Length: 168
Image 1 (cartoon, helix red, strand yellow):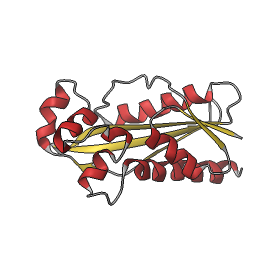
Image 2 (cartoon, one colour):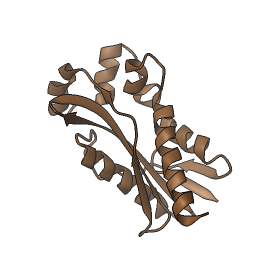
Image 3 (cartoon, rainbow, N blue to C red):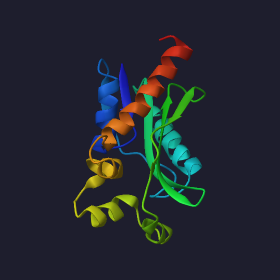
């Protein structure tokens, strides 16, 4: 069986490989259909769904997965958010959210100006390519959990839902 993840980001591909070990996993670039930096839970979820459907629509794919990171405001505080979606047909799509962690409120003005969290994090942490490595979650948890692990948890939830509801 083949799983296509709607991204070429190594952290997302590793998450799918960790959960679907017995499957062929392939990362493919597909549009999220949302802004480059999703700013709400709803927009982040929609991006994950769009990626899962686009990945599923490719020929010879049994499962399409979309993983999307974003930010959200909750009671005036800025949080990291992430969503996943798994498509096995156009009508059968599972979704799940993952870890949330507070982000510095000082990031808000740059986010409102359209800057992406990954770019803000690179400047903040003085490191390159954070979004393809530890991510903001890795920085702010002192490497207790990295971006790949965060997305692995979401992907485990998605697979568990699929197995429970469809008894594959």
